[in-house]
Structure formats: C-alpha cells, structure tokens
Image (cartoon, rainbow, N blue to C red):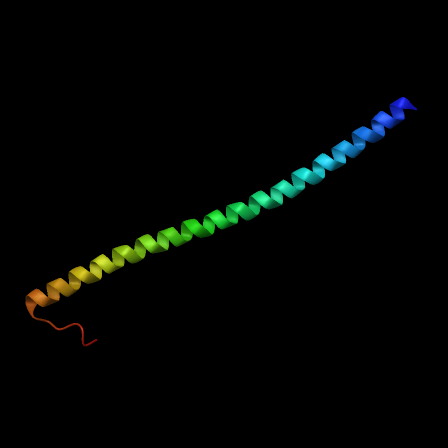
Amino acid sequence: MDKENQKTSSQIKNSEYKELVDFLVVKFDEVNDKLDQKADKSEVIALNSKVEKILDRVVRLSDKVGVDIAAD
C-alpha cells in the first residue's frame, strides 16, 4: 500500500508540475508579446524623431532658398 501511495503522490506531483509549467508558458508568452509591443513602439518613436529632424531640415532649406512650404 505504501508503494501505491507513493505512485499516486508522484503522479499528482507530476500533474501539478505539468499544470504549473503550462501556466508559466502562457504567462511568458504574454510577457514576450508585451515586450514586443513596447519594442515596436520604441522603434516607431525613433522613426518619428528621425522624420521630424528631416522635416525640420527641409523647412530650413526651404527658408534659405525662399520657398514657402507651409502653404501645403
């Protein structure tokens, strides 16, 4: 009977470990998705910054040559 209890106990532990591992896999996937979204946002922010710098240069160049681009 003692061996049966050990086997049942072992099976329960294995089942609980599998459940825990499955839960952690889902949570890690959620965290990875959130990190990917934040990385995407930081890339967009960096690109927006570059675009703003380019537009600023275009405006300064247009001022130097006397072209009014603000009308568009």
